[in-house]
Image (cartoon, rainbow, N blue to C red; front, side, top):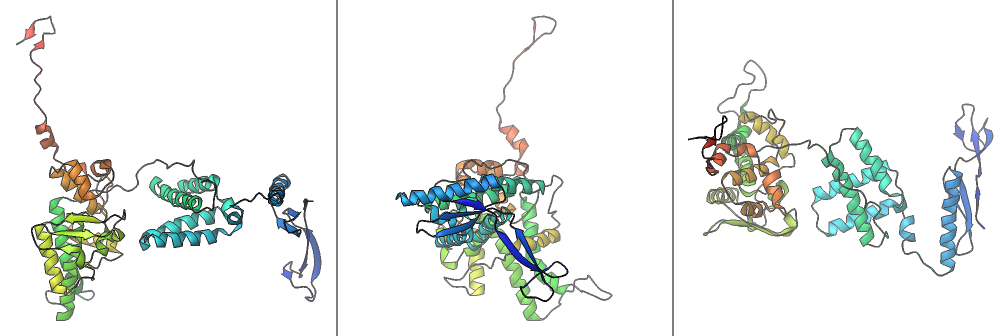
Length: 425
């Protein structure tokens, strides 16, 4: 028979009220009931068990009744396939989920961020087992994030990480159903709005990226001439490395704009992925290097193909070498290059320029060049054409006057006289 109880706990306290070991000199013995209810029941093996429940008696009685019902079903030969999984620590399931994602060859950055968001949700909700993961936990977490000023896109990212974990739990036989299925992505103001760079700004950015490493080693850092740029500062080998670094950074920006590749995709590009000669220079990235895990074949403009060929020859890179060393902190480097180029990071409309804005620049210049939407979608590798035309295309780069000139002439003909039916001829 199952029953509820509040056990008595014996503790020994010193003169200051701190808990000490039994036998400590001067310690006094105290006896106090636990605030939490415990349940006693007999398990399938006939052993008497005691489990902690909760502080509310009615809720504790329901929890104990559920345990007793599961024992009775077990005695009747009815097995719950999810019972073992429900009782395991949540960390065990998260570790298995991480191993699953690594087996899918998910990129390290995406894996790290997905698990970080998932663990933050679980820690905030004090989720210890799968049974404790429910929609209310996510509702409270997302409400807190909204109060803290977190934007809708980031709140949706937390939700997506948690929902993906639950879907995997269902598919792997750890849950009978997805407890987060009813939750929908939230809507809100877009916090980060990007803008595309004009052709003149792109030229200035590439020039700044090429010159800044050499300029930085040539700046006088102290003394009377502090801030001045010396023409021939630094040893020849240091100057040579600075020039090479500037060449690489400008080539990184040019590749991002003229291919539409994402930063991690460009980072994964190897020499063997390039075909730089012949009638159709191109790059062929394997699915392991792309965001959607699908292999892609992109054409290269002739001038970019020549630049890459010159770079590979100058650096002595071979087949399995990465073409470019794309730094993790490229966004910081871009900010400094923009400053030197005289380009504002944020414009008067609050739109910013970051590394991903270079991909927006690609889409915007494709539209400006009258490339058909379907071709632009294929080049950008978007599943939805709305993403290409609405999200990634910056209307400020498009010529509105040219659009107006393309519209047809629509003469209305003679207008009626307001004083009667006589037409104004």
